[in-house]
Image (cartoon, rainbow, N blue to C red; front, side, top):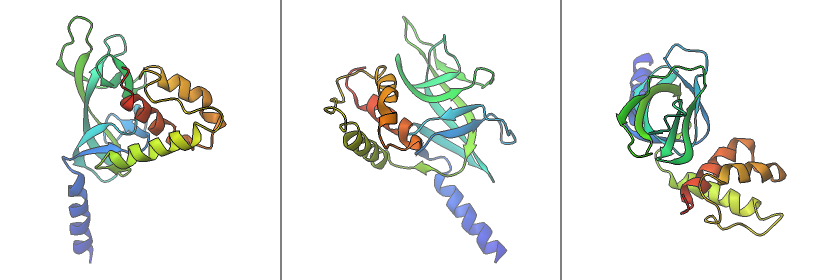
Length: 188
């Protein structure tokens, strides 16, 4: 029985190993598999590659962009403040530069870190559909719904946070909606 259970666990674990997946919620990030202190937060809808599937944590790699003036933050896009992974100011993550930005462009970077198992999706579409539905059904309760392109990606977080407490959107879904708005506006 134990052998069968072990084989089953290994098969399920291998489904995500070395695959690109997306977190469906904000997840705590650690710098080593034995850390108990949270070093940062991984935001939903950002692609990560799972490198190893441990007992409690998964080792992952994320690629993105870093503004040299904010080196502990990995952004989804160059020059646009769409957060993917934010480390605390006191953390010392080993962020590797893939390509140095030139003429004002941000550095393309990657980092390996750890996060808890579970809460991953292989497809972004259901997450974005949920976020779109939350936005459309809740953000038109008090006023006409803003077209998603009315604001640029850098404006959406502050605007959304200034009004979200007037809606029934669960706190656990706030970043999901923000990421949806930022990644779907054509105004960067």
